Picture 1 (cartoon, rainbow, N blue to C red):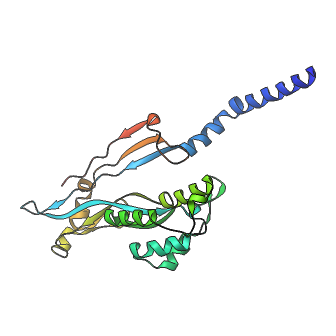
Picture 2 (cartoon, rainbow, N blue to C red):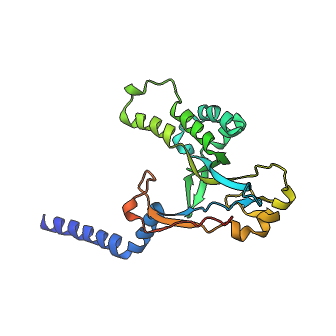
Length: 237
């Protein structure tokens, strides 16, 4: 018995040393990949005004609509049917984009939990999408389900479709002085591509901020572990 207990304790001690000393750096790096995030905080692009201070070009907050296909289960077609009119896209193509797919991440093959559905979505449209997802019915009496199954439907309605921050560039005068004002690209940083938007891009675009923090397994921020929080500086008018 003494030999058996001594051998078991020795094996346990070896394993602890292996995990906490020999391979400490490896597992620490893996843990940080899972929890530590650097979140970009985008600035608001400056306005272009006429001599009376009337805006000729300005930006307003918007959303990037994203999806986690792993949370949809067998209901991707129902979700596509509900969201296609709001996103003004084809129902069949949207359902195809919601199919779970394998991706390579850090040398490992995983099921993708991120699909970009549409950029430059107004806040009002996102609110309609959120309400539509919250009101989805799947013909199941969820009150009679086990807690794990109820959690699946809750996550489907509240987490399967999510957003990231975005901006929409507006030109109230439509084509008024269009060749002078120019335009910005459709990418996520609103880079000026012509006219004043391009010539004064370095003044208008501002400076991005960032937040380095940790997330829990539900992707919620652990504010107590926030390491850096640098506010963005909006662009000049």
